[in-house]
Length: 255
Length: 255
Ligand SMILES: Nc1ncnc2c1ncn2[C@@H]1O[C@H](COP(=O)(O)OP(=O)(O)OP(=O)(O)O)[C@@H](O)[C@H]1O
Ligand SMILES: [Mg+2]
Image (cartoon, rainbow over all chains, first blue to last red; front, side, top):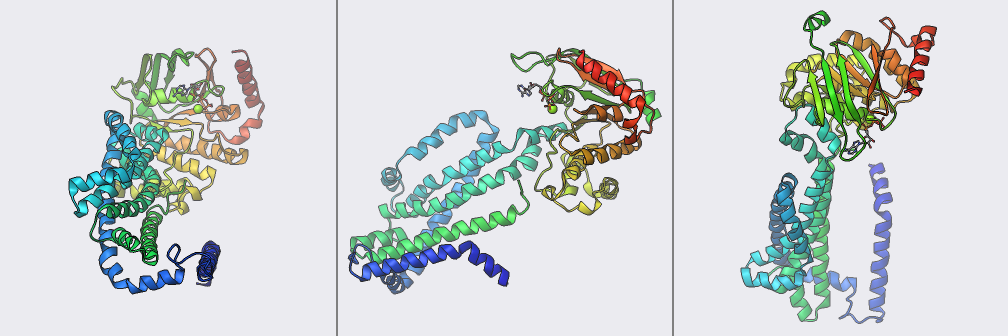
């Protein structure tokens, strides 16, 4: 136990220390009046705003955003895997889809979101559409690249054993693609939070993005920061969950 | 068993009039002929880049000849994939599988019942000095052990003809000596036909019945090794052996 603590301190100690330092300086700078509180609220003010709005944030806005993030992520995952695998198996599909994929990422999110609102109205689906647009690209690319990395050498070895294409896919290419896929998933899940927030900014009736927009309209900087704090916490937690699954699954995938 | 195979008169491997070149390059093989009888141990030597590994890829069916034919066990098949046991130059163990699972890969590919063969496989593992490492992962093994796992995996294909591409190429000279004497003993009881690529002239002489010298012109020169069996590594210090080595070197330099 003592050892685990030591490892934790050596891994994250410095980070925690720097965080404490930043927060302290921040608090001091605001309290001493160098920066007005409506521009940059003090950490203590953010904290008390968080406490004041706790129930509203936790019972209404966080679940709303989380729902968008999760649905968006699951749909991106399914679609991304299918597209990535499809492109791996079919060169025609690859040639058709790859340019579109890249184009889809060059569209400014803020510009297209109003169109989604036009299409899907203020329902949850307009937010999910924005989420998917940001989140599925890393999944497709990491799936596709990961499968390609599967190495011709292993492929050839299995071919000489008389393996079918499907067998090679299952036995070699999928396990080989997992590390790349998980890098994509970790990126994607964080993008999901960004996408959902942007979607809510443009039109919503609940969610942390909606909340922070309303509060910024009211010039309540401390509440805006409280929402941002929760959003980033949400991103971190989702990221860590995927990291944990990855660690479990790839325990023996040494390379 | 060797006698039984001897009765069927067709060679284990027959290559007739084989020509091959990678597109628009100088030909690697020009009208090559090779015959290998059941139970023979034959080495292929040649300078780096001369096409030894390419020969194996042609025999396994990973590549198709430009001209000529390749017959396995007297038969010309539509595809040769799955007909020979191939051990590639790199060990290519799957890093996420344990030793025993790596060894079982050929059975898995052929969808054979693994449980049924387990007791036989345990016997093999201990014969290969791998019994204690059954549950180990490849990254936990030494270079010599990894080669033995890869070799055992090749044997598990159940094929009569084994193609070994420089199995000891990456080992230090002491480990290599051990592996050679181990292979000598093993081969004598295995009764398999082996085609063996090596850079090492002593190794080729010590192990083989015949040696094929791959020349720069893309043809083979054959040399018989008249040393009685059973052999052991001490043989390399005997005058008879040294004479043969001189002869081999002379041929290499006068090709
Ligand atoms: N896929 C390929 N496309 C084009 N050229 C190739 C390909 N594979 C091999 N070659 C070329 O063919 C030649 C023979 O290669 P090969 O790997 O068979 O040599 P080798 O005798 O096994 O060498 P080494 O002893 O270094 O393993 C080399 O010049 C190599 O550059
Ligand atoms: Mg080679």
